[in-house]
Image (cartoon, one colour):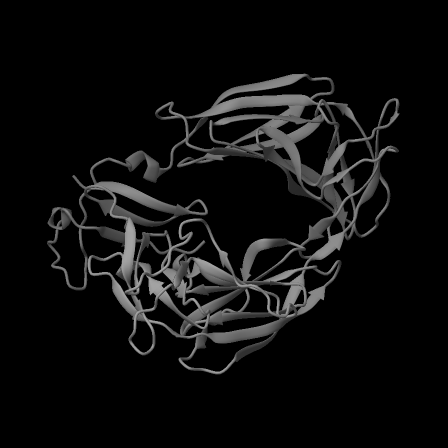
Amino acid sequence: MLTWRALVHGGIALFVWLQAGPSAFAQEIHGRLLLPDGKPAVGARLERGWRFADPAQKDGEVTRWGDDLFRDVTTDATGAFRAPAPRASVVYARDASGTLGVLIPVEAASAEAGVELRLAPLVEVRGRYKVLASGVSPAQTGFWVSSGAPGLAGMDFVALCLTSSNSFHVWLPPGEYRSWCSNDTVNLYSMAALDPDPFTVAPGGEVLDLGSFELRVPAVVTPEGLVRDASGPVSGASVGSFWASMGGTQGPFAGTATTDAEGRFRARLELYGNPEPFILLAFDATRARGALGVWNPNAPALLELELQPTTRVHGRFAFAETKATPSWTNVYITYALSENVDGVPRTRDERILSWGSKDATFDFRLPPGTYWFDGYGADSLNVKKELRLAPNQAELDLGVLELPQTILARHLGKPAFPWTLSDARGLAKDTKLADFRGKWVVLEFWGYW
């Protein structure tokens, strides 16, 4: 029987395919690597990717970058290798001297015949960043290289250079690549495309200088304030612009700070686009008391937050149709921020908290106020509710919230419905799904949103 399966990325179904029989993912890759003269490449090392040192560090070490999948995987005396198959399109192999290399295509290497590839001289690829920061400049920047075409397959990173000098270099075998950048002002491991166009490393080429790239860094602001309660300043309180579940507890995730002995704090936050007022939440160590305030980067002033008893909000999720538990769920809490822009009042919804779970539960605390609850999970649609939390309200039990399943989820494992072909290249119009029994069929849906 042909049944429906789906690949979902970012909440959007990218591909739907029909599967007959068990998964066909490769378990192993194998083959043989040769030197340029055809002799066996003995002791060549396989890795998902390699990290190259800052050019400012003379004789910097080249280290493995990735997981432990290829720990100590090297070619034998005949140049042969055998290793677990990664969920990637390529593996980067380098010889013992570090001067020769090749990208091993995983699909070909997982076939019965394996691959036989010749290593080629590595080419130095270098460049530099011109950092444009409206606030604090990053202490470190990252240059990342991926192989393949844009899209999911193009996110296989094979080389990385973390640098404090704003210059970078990596060594690559011949091929086509794409470049990415990151910095520690935002997140050193959150990559963004550096250049929309790929670059090519030619066989036997000289040093490839990519030139200078402008790296725009968001503004960094440092809100300051005081946390108190009815009896005076509160030390050891946590402050954050966004809170999240961390190992089952509620912790500050962005714009974080801790109050000193006098109840004072100084946080640090990156702002994207035009600076706008944002929310800061403060809680004591037990989260039993909390406060919410608004800080305006355009008119910075000391923000005073007075702690009040918080409300415990908790509950769990289940699918509306089957009453089963989703494999993962998440909750976003937003707060309506009222402001005046050029004399015109407006309301802007700001996310202030999230709660992710693998057991379909949520359990967090908030100070008094009105919020919006947005819950969703694996293979489900959203459920939204208004939360009105009164002063001194100890608890709000939302019980079981039912999540409607997506259309794809409702059809998983069920027989695929018949189709009608209007036109198809290489297929007769009377072709039926049953004609593909035992084969993989990929249906690619295109749309705009």
